Image 1 (cartoon, rainbow, N blue to C red):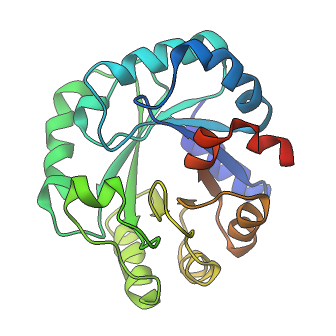
Image 2: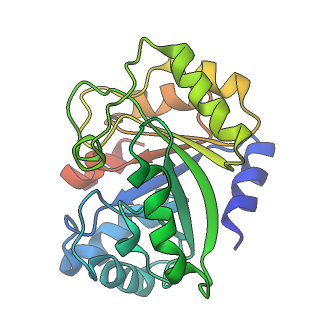
Length: 237
């Protein structure tokens, strides 16, 4: 499956997409088959990645996932060491909301030797960190500050800059463990000005928050912490 083409087609058909983010450091491989009973019923994609992941953990998780699911597995790496050719696609992330060159371009350069001969579908993605009310792992690791939610124009201009620069996706991220998600106003403002798909994640812990993100214009919503802490979360649907 071409992941990006599937996203575009889903938008054209007014279908909303859901991804579950699994952090290799937080997933118990022995419980994976049970977790996937839930994920297989609801998710369109499985994102795999974390801010800090030990070398080899991503590869082991993706390998195990392939035993229990046919859902496309998309890498959402915190750094280049988390790349494995066993996944289906890679969000080629650039943290465009920060000024740290390590996460704007240096990590991407370091990933090239792994990607030159890879079969991964590589999707250029503009990653924008939004303040979710608490310091997140992404903020600590990247040494960048999230954009306050009241600075809507700056968020919009950052997203547009990413689109102008050729990104195929824009990802608005409140961060793992955020106290509150990206606001509907921000999502709506950015979506109205974009002609590329919009991903929203971080701080979404209820069906209502999920629906709010969709209603505001998110094409794909990512849940992580809510599922990690209570995998029965899906039962509310």
